[in-house]
Length: 542
Image (cartoon, rainbow, N blue to C red):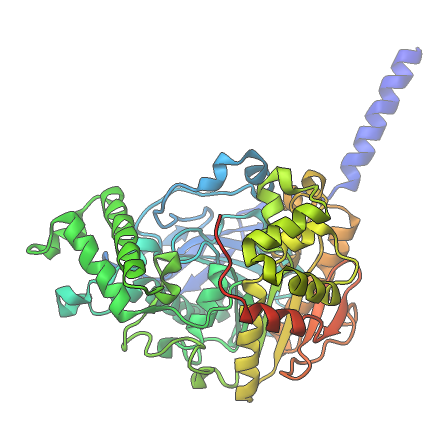
């Protein structure tokens, strides 16, 4: 009898727990939409209509994108489409990192110009919704619109009554191989991937209303390479008037590839393939062979540039948009803020640690003061150590020794420079943030590493619990951050009742919102530190 009662109690507890958890309810009956190419069918999950893998354009290899083919009948758009072919992700080799990031690399295919859309199933009072278009990270070489759990747009769409769009577009050698020296038909090949993004934004403009969206209220936002894409689109004439607000997360880009450099890579790639006298065959080269030739060309040209005493500018990443005088007539922000984006409000920020060394090198995680000073000595020179440590202490009082190892001196300074340039232009406000919250996952090893803010922006702290931990603190911060992103998308101002007053950025005060368990605004907190670091020569590599 006791055993029966015990079993009943266990069953009751299980049923109670199941009832407390929201069940996912999926229907394929009503999620229909008509886009410019034809009718599509998605699915409805918990009140959100979801459409995946919608073709927004088509393109022959190295050619500019064209309007996607129309179709008859209803096209099923319920599964993510092909991702752009790319190199194997190295992160899979690190068990801890693979666990935390939990990538979904999908299946590759060159026919990869696809959009994914999340939108509430019911329109509130017939109002048009703001549209938020996410540009994925991975530089201009890797990634996709589905690669991280945090990219899922359902929670953001539901919370803010907005339309969320993520994209796939051409990358690496397929998106940015400059073959302009081999004929006029290749004039824009070095910016094919950038043209894909412009085509996607045109498609969003033309189809926003089909999903309840407002084509006159589009925000582009992106992280890392996605932030670079946002920065570059601000200076791309073809993208003018296709978006109205811009958010750059850990990816401020002031300059990109020069035409001289991209053409050198193009010529060397063709030489590697032995196609100097038969360039048309490059359209038929198997992708793996094409990528290998392109990567070899990047390495060869980098070596040549270093031997010549140059740096190649943005060439460090190998593949990037190029200032070709056609698609991209100027550097994004290096020559001042682009006039075409004068009236576009921007939010710009980074994470405190970014590519934190202790995340990837376990032996550094318990660094003491002596080890941290040693690191500074090796990285920046013993003559600079005392000055750096003193300025760091003023910027971040109460820091841990390992903070000296992990702190980002790349993304934050560039974000500040971009904010300064945009602010001096006038016309539209800039809002600056620094994400300082540290994840408890892996005993705190992840810290506020690169990509950490993404699940908070999308209100996906629970969906991406392997990165955030999914606890109460993460949920609270996700609620606050997603509120701010939604407010900015709606009005161009990120202020919300759940945050302290967030003033627009000025070059004199450098107001910066810190996102943490306690959110707070700081003024000029690291000006002395950044000014000092700008006078110190490039750090030594290990």
